[in-house]
Length: 310
Ligand code: RIB
Ligand code: CA
Image 1: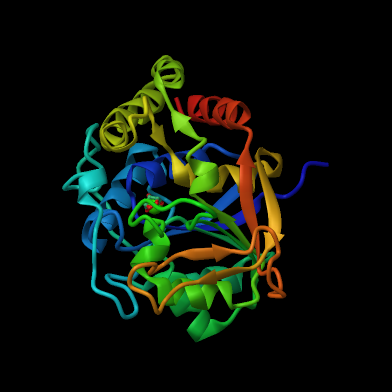
Image 2: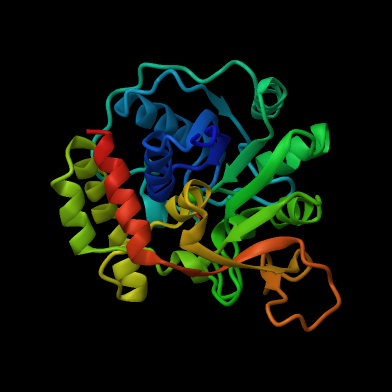
């Protein structure tokens, strides 16, 4: 008897890799995508929300509700990543003109209602700053949440600064609240997602996979420009799709139960995820931290699922 689909709420800032994660979720019968929540991050909230709505239209899934989330961090000033994702936040291939609206509820009320009405505890997949989740937890606590599988942080990398990954750097206070919540948290960080480079070979497979595959390949063409310039890579790390894939198939990412603390006091190391990988302290583990990825198996899953979307 196959397992019941896992109910999921996707909290994102599309964003090229968020977009690929969303399409992967839509193509995966292991998941039941209850709804999407948007956040500032890769671009302003207005732009990420329009991108999420248009992506769902493009995939023929305008039935999936979208709620508008946080426009800025809890305390910090708003910063967006237009240098990576472009002015629209999803520069590159065209999307259909906007023809739908977000839900009338704000993200916190929307999330509370979806969790209350779900038949089983819900998995939250945040792939942007953690402001929405921190606000939700402050209002409603952890009841009804099965686990959180988030893209963010790093053991030994930084992409917004030498010390910090963008999602955590945007709102370190929110991240600190999430990692202190007691929830079952899986942290898919840069150490793992930098192994998920979508390069020319997979791009070619996607182009022959159909309309959606071609769209994903075109997203990757734009997303690769920044990474070629910054890292010299021939491809882009599709960070958020790795987090979503981990919910779909747990064996792709190897994790370790470790303590993770968030730096909020230092400006130099703002948003650093201090991962006690070698257990140098007595701090109790509070997250399953990604340490390795089976990249070939991940891309095999991605291409196979995107192909299903036609
Ligand atoms: O640091 C990478 C993360 O920041 C990804 O989620 C990307 O979409 C941006 O949100
Ligand atoms: Ca993201």
